[in-house]
Length: 88
Image (cartoon, rainbow, N blue to C red; front, side, top):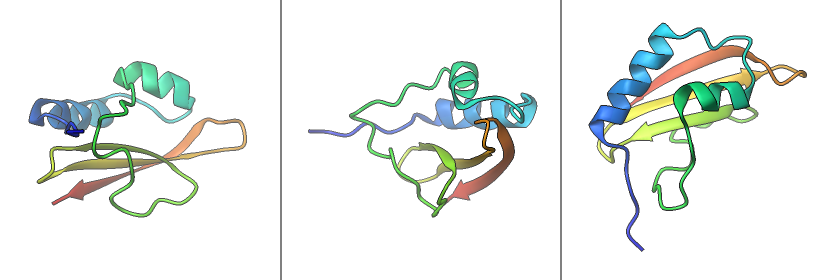
């Protein structure tokens, strides 16, 4: 099975969204809808590059570089912090 990677356009789009859209206070489902994020079984990077225990991870990676966004959720399931890490 050949795994898919994120195209550079998706990496750049994710960066723009995380820079310009207020995600704090949103639920994971709301964030998924804003990002139009649908995990795919064939996507080769459905795991964290950087350890992020207890956080929701969104990874956009072409195999050479990309972004990992770690989101902390409170007890109500709302985003309280977003950490952005460059994968290189």
